[in-house]
Image 1 (cartoon, helix red, strand yellow):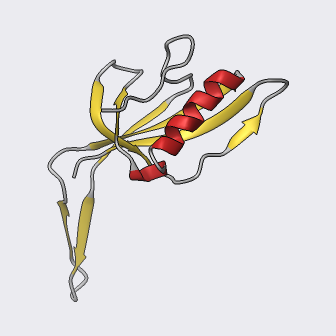
Image 2 (spheres, one colour; image 1 turned 45 degrees about the vertical axis):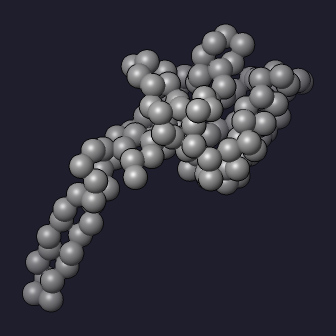
Image 3 (tube, rainbow, N blue to C red; image 1 turned 60 degrees about the vertical axis):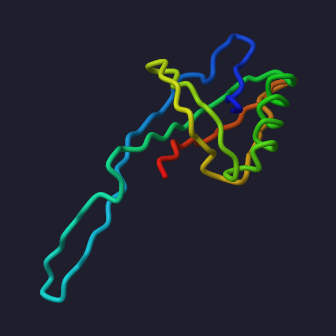
Length: 119
């Protein structure tokens, strides 16, 4: 199993890091206006917005190569939550595009959205 790459500092992300826990819910609306809601999955899924700022060329290239190898959201990899240290075996990127910005001389910044796969 592929694992999300770490930076030279051994960190998987930088702060501020945003993590959310989401339930997948379906809502049925009846003709009389009433609604009924139910979960599509038993467990909640996790989602991380990982900002990586001031990366040197080696770190940025490593993350970009990993993204390309996963074919954007088509791949599957393990991700260790930087907040609680728990390893999630089945994760993927939420988007097929990776935007990299220049953050000064020899420094790059990027933002990735990683989601836990529950299906």
